[in-house]
Length: 198
Image (spheres, rainbow, N blue to C red):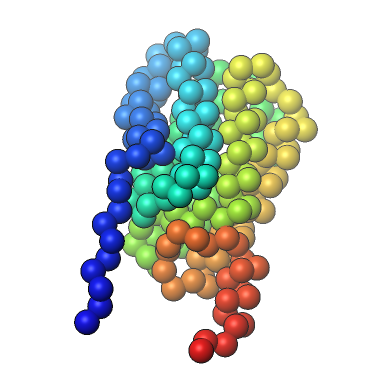
């Protein structure tokens, strides 16, 4: 007889921050559509900061939960889609000459979500080391482009690393048997598969 699973405590700060990002997303979309640039920038920057904070707090204080990972994944998706729409709405003249890299990143990004949905019927919230680093870089880039201005070198670093990270995510999704907290990257997945089970 198997022991009952310990119930996760979903009422914590990281989950609250993720939930905030989901709840505020329609407001940010409305501000972008109506051209309210200043309030849009304030709210999208707050969302980008909370995106960094929730993951850090969850890992630092061992508050990682399955439902928290799913909420965070949905909130990340909403936040970054809104930020990219904001780029198009308010900063596109600066981004357009380099837009090919943005489209390449999004192609790989959506392929990873497609693979996750086909294999597991849910959004693939893996939080690989490379993807977490990419999220920090892209969050910092988006924050800077709205708060300060467009820096081409930061754009290429953030989107280039993001493309590599999501290529890795695609391979990991094809190799793992379930989506669960603790996946670190392709190296660790391959190492685990090569280790003989006792």
